[in-house]
Image (cartoon, rainbow, N blue to C red; front, side):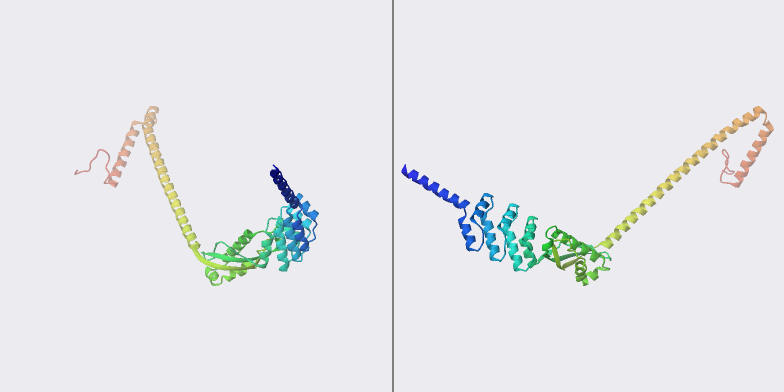
Length: 330
């Protein structure tokens, strides 16, 4: 029984000691003190109550103090509570100071809260980054397609990191410049002979304006010859013209057939009208006999004239004979 009570007392004592040292970080306070960082033990206790890790603040303060920077622990704590990366910001400030880059605490925290890696940006300012563009296809004036690949060397622009465009904008602008430069060339041979002309034209356009980077150089890594776009376009145009001509010819043929059928219909209509008119002749003659306008002698005279006309027609056309008469000798 006594052993159990002693074990319980020891456990409670150890837990109480751990709890005291957890809320009263004496070790961190002593480390800061020997490192020359002025921070009170009460501040560390209040950080623990505000759920701010004192170790992060103390280590950042020690690093900045050893580097000769004067930072306020309250500002570091506020940046942590705002969701920032305190350690990354302090690393960036120390690196910027060593590289003689103008970067203050306010700008560094703004860049960090904007979602950019401020420490990587400082490193990129010291050691420029090379961006490889995807293959860019463009067509020269002679119709030959060229496929170019470029390497863009950029350096981070600290002042433009907040609100500046990213790498995608740089790649898009460089690709647009390459297409414009190749498209303005009179021949693809000029581009192959002087690929640096593309770099000069693109670099002089100020493509890094409004971006978070500064373009240092643009180098054409590779140029390949693609398709003969001009010849393909001419071939497609010729095929299109041929189809148009065939369609127009078919249209004219259809119109001619339609006109022929129309003329045949008109001829049949005319024949029907003639037959109808001939059918009215006997009726008119009968009516003339009844009214006395035509006598019997007039009728025989008309028949004689008709017979004389048929005879003259048969003499003029020996191959055709009146109906019911065969030529002599047959």
